[in-house]
Structure formats: structure tokens, C-alpha cells
Image (cartoon, rainbow, N blue to C red):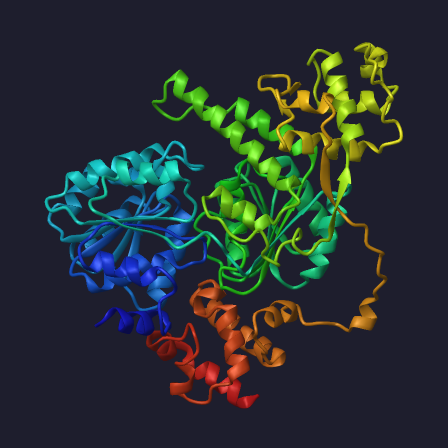
Length: 613
């Protein structure tokens, strides 16, 4: 079987996506590989296709149980014998899986990194032909990555201890230059084929909002995505519970997920979301890694996350099927304070000394600063993300809130001078809130207690709204005139560049033009099908009535086989079926995502529905 035949037979695709074939060829030629590909770009195909063609067993090292379970279910549905070895198995199940692995019953075995150096696992692999060790979520090996896991450092020791060194492949979605260098060195990749396909996900729409009422803003977005599947990320467990309770009280079928819940409740809620029993998941960042659910149409960050790596990884869980999806971020000043609190109290990695621990905290503070800048930039949001990861584009994507907003330059020199003057006169003793309250002329107890009402700049901007004063102060931080000190108290200080403002330099900032409010009525627009907006953006013209019938059949099959619906067929595949309306086996096999194996299992049932329409 050739690589193209394997791709079509087991996965239903006629051609490889960009970058996939290069990495597949590298592995098949016996070379190590490092693939850096965005979420949804098809990293798993890059090691699964070679695993089918190579003679022995492929071990896939994966950090999360949910990821392994999802991948193994998908492979078994496609007719590929696979298994996983992790703590979710009983002792008996683990021994049975090891025995079957040693007998060569599986082509692909997923294993947790903690299991690699156990006696039972080493004994099992000792006499096996291992053709490849593939490291998924490879950024976990670097202490400079966002998900450092000390157990990943044992991978090299495991590989070195094998009788014959297999091909080693490594894959990740987000990796800065330093993390890439760590992966290459710590896995000791030999003459690797290294490929970065680019971090851009063109099907994702990015937006940043600064809502005065986050719940109201959330409800507006949920109405726009009625009937669609989405994830809402919150910064704390408390916020998750509050948002979840509110949504359910208002009639939404939402699940929740955070580390404060019991294991069984978390597992049940995750399954409810994956199996489409619940359309909305409200969660902390504890949820999501390894979740391959393809029909997530929106990811809303109710709070700002701690860094760009985390944000892009979480936002990237939308639109994995390649169809349009929305990534919305709500920003509030308290988000920065909460993240700083988490950074100050974070425990250093295992075996890290005090100096290294403090260096990691300093790096996290710098990352938080860049995440905050993302929330205030008036430039293209997609370009900001790509530049963070070392790519450079046109600074206009046409598919983010900034590119679709008209901006105008506004002179803010007078406000900036008042803020800088107030900070200097207060001798750098206060944070943002006190400075803003002072120049606004607040009569609050804290201002009087600190005698800031005696500051020469007190009340100098009394006619300027507080939110605007904060905007200008954030702009001054973004442009390097001000900075926030570290430590227990977040004090605003001046940089050397601030002297230029006091010497007469003018400063302006881009602001969105105020647009006249347009009154539109739902009745005038007519009731749209939930997926109509995304299909029109993706050039699809499905028969919505037929699509719903196909989706109902998919759900019936999924319940019977006890698998997530998207593992049977993705929404995109069903849409193409409802658009092209195949009438034979040959035509059905032309639909993307329908391979020989899946056609034999499900094809005729779907053809009957199409023919009856």
C-alpha cells in the first residue's frame, strides 16, 4: 500500500494538506522529523500514515488521557488497530494491552510518558520491533514552553535504551524559537527534517472586546451562535461556576470543567460535550488539550489568558474542520492582576533551582505583558499573533475585528502628560487605579488617605471618562513610556522614554470611529439556519434540510457505537454530502472524509437518506 492509498482508504482524503507529505516522506526515508503545525493542520496524519507502512509498532507519547482515548477511537473507527496505555486502565487491562502489543496486534500504541521507564513496559517492548517513537505535544519537553512536563525529559533515556534506535518524530502546534531548540536538543533528533507550516489559521475570526458587562456580551454572542457548539474559557474556578450557573438558568445546555471538580464529574461533563449531549463547555484551561472535536464553532475567552501560547492553543480548538469559526476575547483590567497573582505564586518546575525558578517567573511576566498588548493593539490581530511566533505578514487579514474597524488618529498628548506628571510627583508609589483616580479628581477615601488630592495633577483630567484614562495609560505602557513593576504591589513607573513627553513630544493613538447604531430586527432578517453564516463564508451551499437528516443519522449511529458523532463523519463531510448529493459508491468516495473503510461501515445508510430526499 502506498502513502496515497493509505490516506484515502483509512482517512478518506484524496491529497495531503500542506507540509504533511514532506514529514511523511522524511519518516519513511528513516529520518527524524520535527513538525510545527497549527491546531487543525493534521499533525496526527504525519505519523499515522508512516505507522501503517512501516514494519513494526509505532509508539505515540502523549500527555493526556483524553487525547489518547480520542485518537484511538478515531483510528479503530477507521479500521486501524490501536490501543493506549495510561492510568485509566485497570491492572488487568494494562497487562492485557501489553500482551497484545507484544504479540503485534496493534500498529499504533499511545503511551503516557510516565509509563516509559516502568519495568512492565520495558519488559514488554524489549523483544518488539519498534519502528517509530512519535512525541505529540512536544513543547511539553521544554521548561520554557507553556505546558512543561518533567516526565517528557525521560523520553530520550527511553529511546537510548532500546535495542535498535527507531525513527523519532516530534510534533507541536505552538513553539517559539527557544522551545524549538529545546525539542531538537532534548530529544536528540538526528539530522531531522524540520518543517514549520505556518501558524496562520485563515478560517478563524479573531476579536477583542472590552465589555462593561461581560455576561451581557456573552449572551449576545451565544444568540449569534444559537445551536452551535462552543467553548467558554474562564480564568478561575469560581468564574466557571458563576458563568455555568447563569447559562443553565437561562436555558442553555452547558457543561463545566475545572480542577476543583471530582474526576467522575469531569469525565462525564467532557463526554457530554464531546458526544454533543451538551453544546457549550464552560471551563478553565484545565480543559481542552487533546480534544479533537471538529465542530466547535466558537471559543470565547471570558477572561484574558496568561500568554499568547495558551491563548492561541485554546482559541485553536475552534474550527478544526476547516470551516469558519470565531475566537472572541473579553478583556478587563482585573484579568492582568489575577494572572500576575498566579505567576507570583507559581511553583518552580521539578528539580529547578531558585535562580531558574525566578527566571521562569520573569519570562511569564514578559509573556503576560505581550498578551495584554494584544488586547490593546489597533493593528491586525492575526498579524500580531503571527509576529509573536516569528512570522511576518501584511498587517491586514480582513478577518479580525481590527481589520474590519475604521480607526482614526487621536492626539492624547495632554492626557498622557497629566498621567506622567502625576506618576512623577507621587514618586512612583502607586498603581494604575490610584493614578487614574487622582487625575480624574476622585474624592475616594484611598485618594485622600494617600494625600493624592494634594498632587499638582489632581483633577487635571476631570472631564475625561475613567475608561478613557485607562485606555491612554495602557497605550503609554504599550509604547514603552510607562512600565508596571513586579512584586506584591504593582506600581506604575516611568521609563527613560517618558522624558520625551515632558519635553514636548506629541503622542497619538488609533481609536475606533464611532459608528451610527443600526436598528435591525430579527423578524426582518428572517430566521437563519445556525450554520448558514459559516457555510456561506466557506463557499458551501448545503441543503440544510438534508444536512439535518444526515446529522440525525450520524447521531443515531454514534449512540449505537458509543463514539462521538464527529468520529463517524465531520460536519464538513455531511455538508458536502448535502450539497453534492452523491448517488453511488463511486460518488460517495469523492466526498472529503469518506474512505473505503468508512464507506463499508456507513456509506449505504447515508446514501439511502440522500436518495430519499
